[in-house]
Length: 95
Ligand SMILES: [Zn+2]
Figure 1: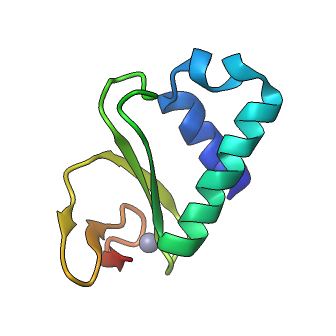
Figure 2: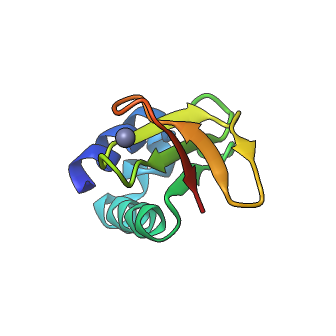
């Protein structure tokens, strides 16, 4: 999971706000994203920190373990956040 989320974060994080703050800082960010994925099933990069200027969300599919990203356009329900896994093609709900 660490390798995969690191790759995704490198693609979407503003470099000066990620490794630009030092490898130690970047590792703390990576660790906190992994913790959030495990605990909540999703995490994000805020619009301040993303290269696109829009918040980027990451979802962990608890069935197949795939992490996928998307601009925030998901549906919130009382049960959680609906998203469709790109790998196993099932609709999921993360807390
Ligand atoms: Zn899946």
